[in-house]
Length: 180
Image 1 (cartoon, rainbow, N blue to C red):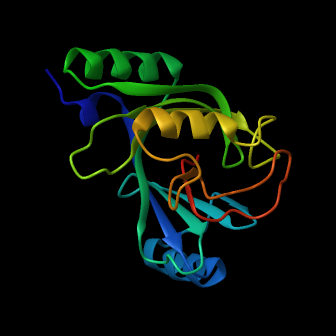
Image 2 (tube, rainbow, N blue to C red):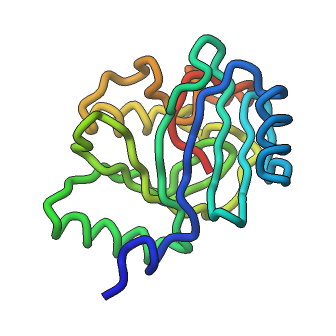
C-alpha cells in the first residue's frame, strides 16, 4: 500500500508569518525561481512545482519567521473525506470546516486534533477563488473550529489566515492560520 503522501497529496503547505510581505515575496521569488500564484493585501501564496510545495506568506509584523500552520492540499472533496475517514480510523479526531471562505478561497477542509506540540494541520481542497478574504460570516466559523481544537478563539497566531478582520472587511491579513 502506498503512503498518504504518495497517494493523495498535491503538495504540502507551509504557512509562515512574515514581518514585511514585499521583502518576503522578493526573497522567496528568488529562492524558488517563481513568483506568487496569488497576492492580496497582507497575503501571498506560491504554488511551487519542485519541490511540490504551497508556500503561504502572512504579513504579521512582530511575528516574522514563525510557523503559522501546516497543511496538505488535496485534489478534491472526495479526497478530503477519504483522508478524514482514514485519520479517524487511526484514532485522530478532527474539526470540520466545509464550504468555508478564508484567504481569498472557498474551501472544504478539516483540522487534525491532538498534534503533540500543538502544531495545527489542515487537510483541504480549494473549491474556487474568492474576491474576499473572509466569507459572509467574517471568519466566525474559524472561531468555532479553533475552540473545538482546544485553543482560544481569536488568540495570537490562531486566526484563519491572519486576521482579526471584521465581517465583510476585505483588507489586510494579520496574525493567522489557514489559507489556499
